[in-house]
Length: 239
Image (tube, rainbow, N blue to C red; front, side, top):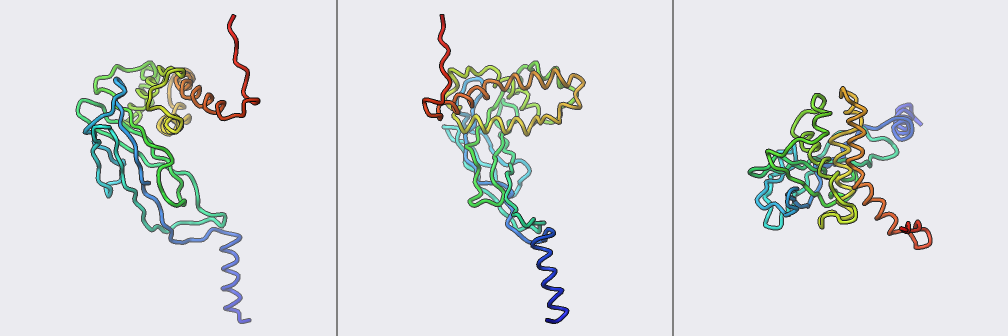
């Protein structure tokens, strides 16, 4: 075997087993995404809202119909990446934005699996819209100096809204998948690390976690419902 062949073979083995390989793969810029835009005050769908992927100018915005629903096409492109031997499949997310007259800019998250096929959003995306003049929440006061931008401003309103949900009587649009989607969006818009720059860090984070309790209660209830009857916790009986 010639020296050149040996070198080529050794390089191939190293690439496959010892180091990462540089390759061109199909990268999902944004997934195929469907969803609905909801007025947070009334719970009604928002007609005429302009919905788009944030930062993805190549995908045109769409306008919601009378039912508040929208569908955004996905976008893929070839990219040169470093691919580990174990594969390149991971969870990713794209930002969805909505605009409508008289309402503040609203945001949501379209989660998907990067490297998976087809590249569609894992959940139906629900975008909650608030009035432009909506009153600030208690979390605003605690995080005034450590948040910035329209997305975080919306997330603060969003968390306050969530805190008022009655788990025993949730809105009709709040199904199991939507609960998970809302939790994921809030964790990305207001990550735990972001609270570290707040002067009142502990108070702010404690309030934020408390505000999410209705979503967590709904998630627990769904989990319990899926358990076999003999594994479900006994219901507490009142006196």
